[in-house]
Length: 172
Figure 1: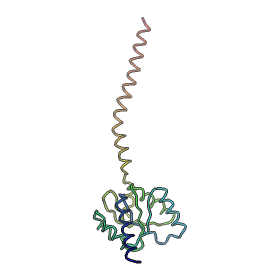
Figure 2: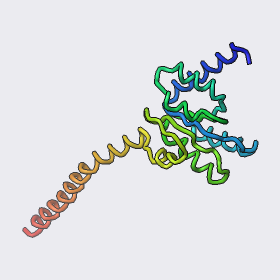
Figure 3: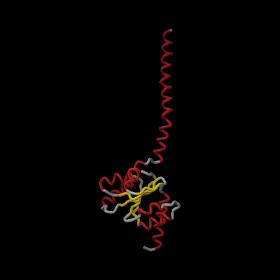
């Protein structure tokens, strides 16, 4: 491969790293063409960008980024596929779901929410990470709960008071 081509690929990967907030490095070696196509379709459906990379080129792309990714360099051995996503737990759920049938992909490492996760045993922790939208929904739900209770109490009290006044009005 020519040096110009490598530089173009490195720049493209660096752009993906800066564009997406989270990435997962996985091992998909051993998947046949059909399973790989199924994985690509599933990634497309879940808005996850899947790229098969050469480790040295991906490492250079990470080195060219503004963030320090040195911790993730240790997993860049053997065949690597990178899953880019703007939602932290989507690739983890995708890997878990797909690995039930195919035993692959295997999580090598991930950069999620400005933290590095190394090893397959971190998959469950990554699945349980809530996305920004889920956290906002939880906070809104917690804030609305007391307000709903007050409104409910006022509405039930209002109908009770209305009923008592109506009954007293009919007695006369």
